Length: 484
Image 1 (cartoon, rainbow, N blue to C red):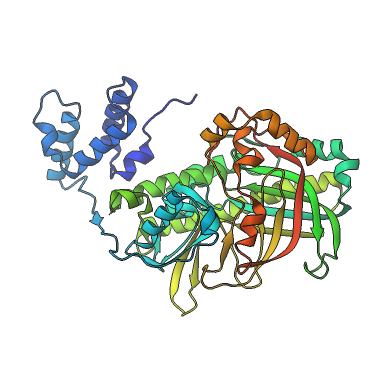
Image 2 (cartoon, helix red, strand yellow; image 1 turned 180 degrees about the vertical axis):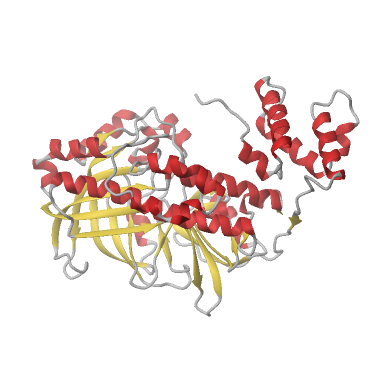
């Protein structure tokens, strides 16, 4: 197990911006952590309070932070290590109305989180999708439009640009039965899962030729990690799978009605996006003070350096996540010696500059929600044993041009391990003729809502063009701890 440590990024987020004082803070903080004097959150809370007002920590000779407090005071006398500007904001007293799709299937915690989100002083509009469940800051399935020059890292999510990608091949869907071993072998040979997973062979690494990789120190420091993880997938609900795609007549342009072999993948921006989210969410929370229930919805201002840095990094993470999927799909297509007749993809953890129906410029955060503007194609998966769907957005203004990003969880991972029986999962997979590689009980079909109920709740948001039934599924090994 990786040893818990207080990182320099966490100290920087508190306002520690001098190399010498950084060494002192790190030595004291990690010393206290190592010897079990305090836990990590208590240490960070004390450091935050010390930076705000170091004087109280100088009174007690036995105080573990006394030397740090004195050093901060001395530096400030020299005009160094000045107190970080922080603004405290109150939530709106009246909660704005927002549409909730499939409200009868949404847990109270997700509703409460969405009510808090639309109460932010920067909130303009919100909506909750039918797959919604409790998350971190903004609920999964939450859509939040804020003022145009603000962005909330935790409303984008930890796995920036987590996305779907589908390749359709001109091969009969029955190939999953007649060539099961071959297709399973392609997944084993050309996909890589897990925390820290890397690959040395790349199909196309031209993304790394972009000058954007040198624009900020944070991005520069993560470039090597991103390169090593190009074409890999994470843990949790990330997957790559073969399945049977059924297309209705005249529904999907360029793809005649029929049943096809298709490859579907779900993952995001890996360690690159995770580190970006961690770094800038801490900065946001250190500079924008909010009531306790809203603290993870702290925002960055795009008029400031931190906001611009996050915007650049987030968009690069989006392109990187897309490149990850293309690596997987291109390698498998090459091994199959067949180009796909169509490829469809979409983000669902991202922020976009858009306009509301009345022309208001806003920043739209979709955390676990699919863009569904008029005519926009997207993919909404179910579970490992239930169908997913290719959809076309209807441009519903009430939902802020959004739809669900999947079926949505019914229970936590902990609850899944406590309540779900492995033999019942085995029976379900056998009945649906599913070949499973990896995964564990926390991703069993039973942990998800009924995808048909979810789709029924958003008929005014999307049209269904095709359905995808998983048949050969690869996920991270059971020993891998989920990242999301």
